[in-house]
Image (cartoon, rainbow, N blue to C red):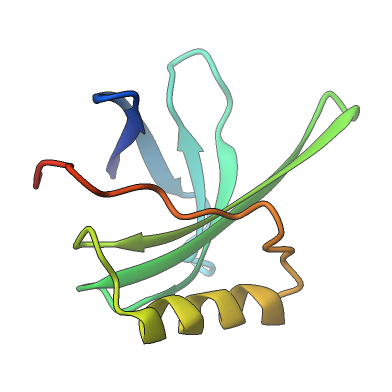
Length: 114
């Protein structure tokens, strides 16, 4: 699977393209994702998806056993998700023990549709 991401940054978009693989067919929600041929696959866990409008994804990894890094994404196919959808996704993350303190919404105003 090819993964493409758009990162808004000061009136410009930065893109990243990577590869996602299911590493164990018994656990298809656990993916390995790499954004470079030279980096190892990072663990990504799809907590939920409806395959049409919403996916909630979580990743945590240790870097050289010195740093622990966690990421969580609420991903939508449209720029604006209904508040109840965002609330559902946040409650799911909280129920999984994921701290939302640093989570912030990406500003979607003025973005082009892709």
